[in-house]
Length: 390
Image 1: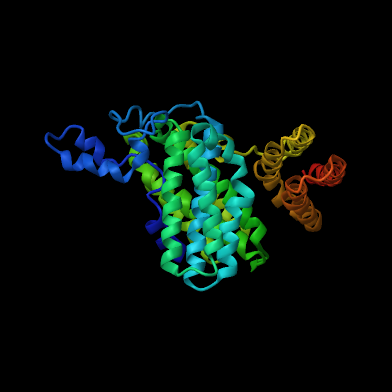
Image 2: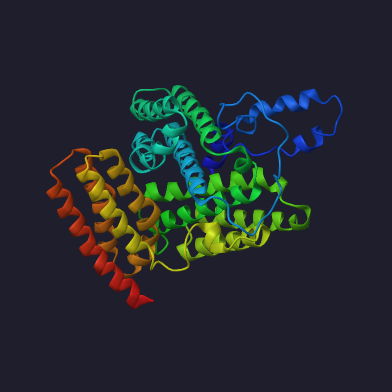
């Protein structure tokens, strides 16, 4: 896949430990090897200082049955999804498809950024402003820039994403294999849902969602490859097994296989990662085994959205609406589509676009309440259908 090659030029992404560092720690006079750490800024960037140096990586291969910080896993997954969108934007720009390139520059802005902006701003307000501004500039460049100009700007954004990871995520998490494998599982879970929206009966229905699925699988694969040298020797036999499942997954997506085939490959990877880390498959993927908890959480978040809007905290209201969609409704879409695709698509539009547009234009609160009431009515129908199916 072209996207796979492109990811190599765009990344330097996750700041995972290069296994050569372990050799370097014991090799006298290997100063040149240590200098290579500059390629991985997250390894030397302190969370508070913005870092100019760090000591040896600690506990990078430690496996624990307790799951890493799920909030930080979600944050890192969102950063990686932005990277995936950048890769797809470049791939489409290179073939002259500015419509799809534009879509992939807008998704980070419209669907992801609000859910991470608060954490970035708390760590470094200037970085938050620079990253947000740069994403907007890239989107504005789609039609009028050369491919090289576009790729250069995307590379600059990737550097800002590196800085963001270093500022928000503690270095001990960045260098922890269990943490990174959870990010892999989270990305695969999101990719699975995107793919289910894209393919129906072996036919491509939604090209943007299909490319999203490709991109997130690519990012998950890259992170796994960077993390695999850190997996303890006793579990190292699982590495080629997981790599084989990734190859099966890429082939299935390339061939536009039925979603069940893709889900099976993703499930196999998740199962193996769970065995390696000792963390449950549900925690690895960031999803529960059923969807029953998601709809109540959507309602809860919508109530919080209304309260924030009532208090004129419009940014928080927008972020909560995004959380209701990205972290919850997306995991309901696939099973709901099997029961009533029209209801799924209508509710998605109401939640993902209509509600946020009302918030952003700061309409009277009565209109927000009316929109939320309509969404809740659809959620009632969805809940009944999902309960009856299973």
